[in-house]
Image (spheres, rainbow, N blue to C red):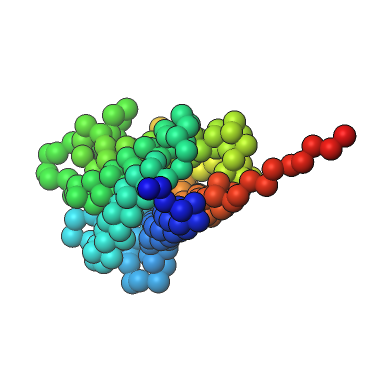
Length: 236
């Protein structure tokens, strides 16, 4: 016995709403850093990285670390749901897997926070800062994963003529995020202060906006995918 097509359609739409809600909430939680402007936190937003907010021993660390845990806890099942619900295509499959990796890396980021350097310990940057603190490695994995997800879904939007929102707003967000990343990579290797904190906040803010755009795209994609196709009659 097969399921009624109407029941299958309702299940697909309900699943898409769950996935979209999880991604949207994750996007909002990933922007928890804006609370630094509301809480009594002594931090230089222009020149310090966001990792300082939930570093070991920092006040209000639990607020920011909990928000990041929620991000990972929501994105992992959302990505798996996206893989199972939507038709399998190469680029979107890469995108969903990269989103899952981003969620896992965000949780790892929390479990391995930035720590203060012990006397005599080398915590410098250099070409491979991952060798100095595990947190640098997890942060690199997180940023790389979501960059792959953004790029894969953007290409998919153009190649498959689907995911319309990501073809329109997604490209703008991609350009803004990529520009902030280049700003950080170049300025980090120069002497002097180049507002790296602002660059990272623009980068992370663009990630949050993209997640919300992806959530909206999931709802629209599921709606178009489950809409019944009305056959066109051919008249001469």
